[in-house]
Image (tube, rainbow, N blue to C red):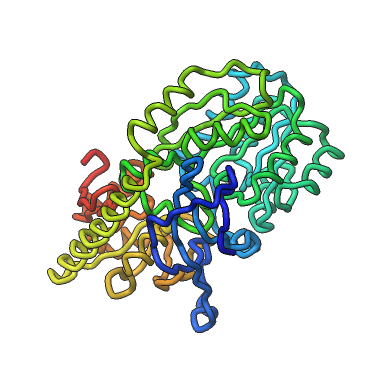
Length: 414
């Protein structure tokens, strides 16, 4: 569906600044049997709203096409991720002095890692996860979860089973929602009067500053910054009353919102707005400069890989996150460059990457096969992944970290 107006402020003043072409869905890994079938591609373009400043995709893929029975992302894959979510649960309970037995609901709850943290602290929990295969794993982990998209029906089920929630969380989910009006209506019904909505998402400023264009894919409909968020919540009678920066995923925002008047607004909200204006992150000319830098980056990375191939070096990729599929498809890095991709997530092993159709093997193949170079697609976990593959480095293996600038590393501290 082509976007006709801004999903936050409804302005029709949308201006295109980045076109990454037509790409397949980043999490649509293919079985061998499906390689000869039809693979759907969708436009991947980013526009700037000249009304409120929100950067967003101008084409919306139906969510049921993305969050289906074969959805491959599991939030428990890395220790960094697990530690982050468990720490988040503790921080929220401490920040708001939430009593034991209160209900925490997590949207896009995945296998339940964040809710495990709340549960360990004595809270009631409920997950909302539309991908049935992932929902089943959450239930196996002891986290009650309903397999629906968040909306009126989900809220009805939660109220019937658990009552109103004191905490509503959405980590890397809020930016995936197209109908934000319906989302806010459902949140109003679900949350207690002083209930808090806490969400995390990559910060658009970091995306610009660090050239993190690979985090742009069809699931990520909006690229969030403080100015449009403040305006959006105000329009709903809510307030964005606090924000914290987190290092995860290349630099994320943890935002806190609630009905107006219940919590003091941190003065740094205004500081963020002023800094965003100073940095011109809602300025179309800054966006065009970013788009030009993306084209230059593709040239640098492709040339680096081509030079290594000319030297007779064998190259593979390590990790197969969604962001990596944007990088591979936009840069046209296929089987002519990479022999294979290794992965820790079992659901991806034995399949082929979307678009480029590179085979996916288990992480152990990196050590047994000993390729010369490994392109690290999950660069946001570079330190952990390289440290975990210390033996590969000892045997002469080198890592290529693509973002923000292609560079070769021989160790986690390089």
